Image (cartoon, rainbow, N blue to C red):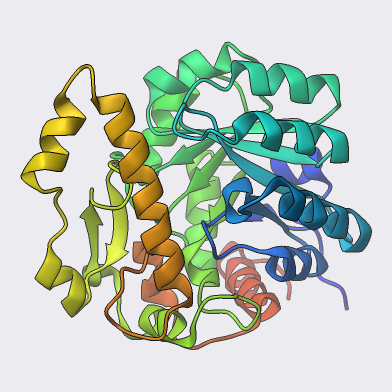
Length: 328
């Protein structure tokens, strides 16, 4: 028998069966994963920066529009480090993606232009100050990035962040970070989230395009092995603390740190660090050696084997129903 819907503001907005977003992970989330997510009753998003050229990005959008059985989203980096933003947004508008997730920077123009095309916009936020500011631009929801998120994590626990955001906005809040089980899904919904953005548990899936070494690292390591580094993008980013990371350290060298603090040079230093870091992550994601830097969050704690995307979702929903006292 087909499982019942879990109704929340997010499922109503997107018309999905379960209030889950397969998070837009740099170089991990791709067409195959997003299509699998849609078939399993949730939605998925892809970072526009996964594509080196606008032509490749547009080809991906065309394929998603043709093959997806549900809504899909695109993640756009809104700050000045993303020199491709203008053309990426234009492509999203032309192909009328279902929703856009903005990260960093000022999303006002993105929200305005997307709404003119009927495209939903969700904005990443890490505190109530930015959350209140962004809410003034009238997005369709906020993605509350907490301290347990993978990649560029926040500083607050999920409960504290949701509580603070709820005091400054009535917008739907999607919790991002620290969810790998149905028990945690229920917990975040009870905290006031209307949906969950999940990334790291999907790295080690059959559809994931990354190397087997990267996937196996997510199985072998756990939450205690996640550390923050500033060497990839200039902004603190979570990675697996492999022997390679331990040897090379997680802090910027003296020159990098100086440039990032210099008022005149920090803008350019951040751009250089960002693109060097993205190149490093690209190499690591598809490399076949442990001498790499792999991004992941604490929720790899719940990754015990490499499974299809569908099975990861089914396991989370099955446990959620048991915890919530619903019939299976």
